[in-house]
Image 1 (spheres, rainbow, N blue to C red):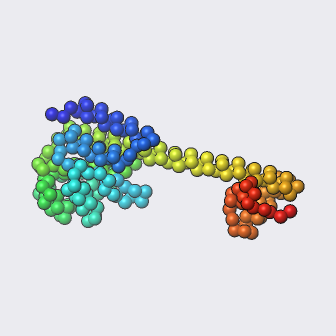
Image 2: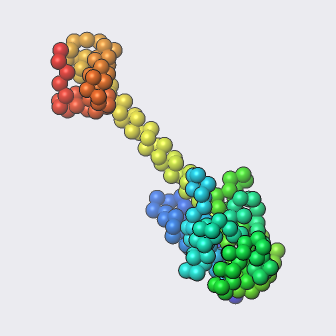
Image 3: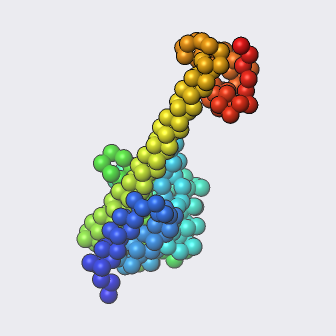
Length: 237
């Protein structure tokens, strides 16, 4: 019997780990897929996430045949996880034998893999849908309302973790870009001062000379400014 309290506690610990420096998103998603299997009592789980263009990609699976099934869905553009992502709502298929009309290729492939039911839950935070969690079982109608509610809660937890990680990455990029801009400005200001003293002109005129030299030589202003400071660029008086 799985201790749900302990399992959920561990999941929240994993969520907190998305904010640390050495966080590994792939490992987190693999552990999460396996955690869903344990907590929900289903044989298999898979995750698909959308990229910046809205294209779904298989990112995690609890076992190999589930990974292949997720890839099969994406390759053939049919299956519960695609419908779930497009509609931004759960897709329940308690009996694959009766779902042939909806996903004929997928249903046949899933049954050949030994599965009888599948449930797809949206990975969504408010209006932001980033993917879908698929739960597979070898029995029909294996998840009741409580199980589906818990499954959606787990999908929500993973969504928050992924979005936190993306936000942290974007903030790191923005911070690095800002710092690079500040560093560049310092170098350019130093070069303006050096050039103004060397040419005996005002700082504003020195910047005009710096900019004109960069343009006429098809170089970046920062590159020329760095050269002026380290004496590898000589602008004639």
